[in-house]
Amino acid sequence: MGAAVLVAPTSLANGCIFANFGGGTGISSDPLLVATADHLDELKDDSNCWGYEFLQTADISMGGATWTSGIGSGSPFFTGTYDGDGFTISDLTISESTTNNLGLFGTVGSAGTIRNLGFSGSVAGDSQIGGLVGENQGTIENSFVSGAGSITSTFIYAGGLVGYSNGGTVTDSYARIAVSTTNGWASGLVGLSSGGTVTNSFATGRITGPDAGGLVGRQSSGSATASFWDTQTSGTSISFAGVGKTTEEMRNPSTFSGWSIASGWDATATWGICSSVNSGYPFLTSFYTENPCTSEPSAVGSSTPARYQFTFWLPDGRQCTSISPITVTAGTSYELPGEDAACAVTGSVVTGWRIPGQLAAFAPGRRVQVSGSQRFTAVLEYSWVDVVFDANVASLDQCLSDGSDSTRREASWSVPRELLLTGGVPVPESAPCTPPGHSLIGWSTEPTGDRTPLSTLPAPAVDSDGNPANAVHLYAIWSPS
Image 1 (cartoon, rainbow, N blue to C red):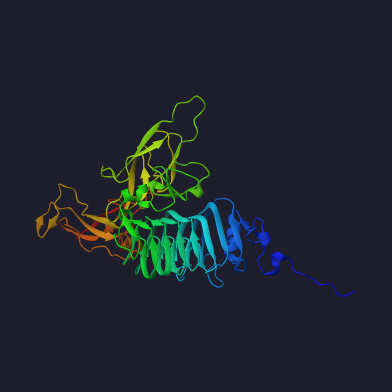
Image 2: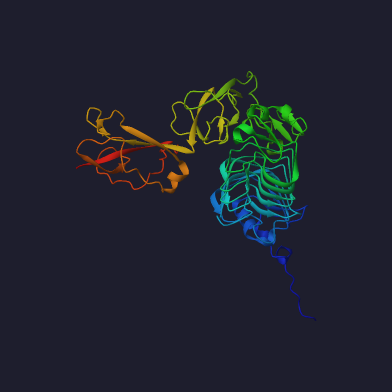
């Protein structure tokens, strides 16, 4: 009898351990199943699996986890197929300051496909940073990135969906997330396109940085067909490709007349559009198993569900007429406008929505249950912070300026928020006025008590409910001369 020959099981033959997923053998008729955060971690960590077929079977929350690389970061690239099947991945941060081509998927090779997948989280890296894919050489379809996170490049090229489209295709997809770069070419959908194509897609996110583009930041070659960006929420009217539209136009079905889109919801259409879903922008119907544009069925014998109005306001009392009022139906859930909502003044973003009688704000993009009419007031975070320097002298006491008693007891600076957060701005060496017989020791955030002088301007505070402050108040500390 000859010697026995040991043959590796199929799940180990090529190094990918199929048993670490929820089932399947990684072929199109029997994809590997992804249902948990552990399954996603396994896919990200095992490059031997990056050429197989995957099917997501549930919404996955990553529970606030942080990755330093994406699926397909490095070699080999992701060349398989990942079908989200209308599910989402959320609550994940992907961050590595020295990494290029960073996203939920780092690089998708020319044979790779990502489809039917939603992502909500944040991505930050060096260059070519995207929400869903860092570098796309393959196919992205029927997918989106949204939420209160951000896509950030510390160098160049960032896109809400794709950082760098290197001959790749994007079809029937969108991004609704803030995007920024330090040195240029941030864009709502694709940061840099070289031979890439975009079809039937849109972007609405706020764009920050030099050479911003509403849909495509920079394009050496490629095209965008029947694709749009919101010129109001993005803060830019320019793009290398695509067509800019106002917020009102982006919520009008006629803008998307060439798409497979229904006014309301139709499971046979790729897209739907109604005021109560996706802040009134088009939504992908495959992410819903029933009509999201109407209320739940009424009880037998009940009347038609009540209709209410949601209104959205600025803190100064002005109504945000481009997104308000919205008619909503009792018993449904409504997705609040996102960080990029057209309800912010120049130089600010929406960080929450506050209702009367409730101090804590709802997060942008959060779903709320409709039970009556409601007024929502935006909580704004400004890119510039007012720093007030208070001479800290009673109104009846003398306070000398240029040798005479001054009525001006305060002065203020406008300082970029980013500078205050880095802690590098020194406090001034003088006050608006000086009480006779005193010399300035320094500045404090407290008007009285034992105080240690500050050497630099403090960062703006965040209150107990997480709402940002847009002003810093400092008080002079005096010593008798």
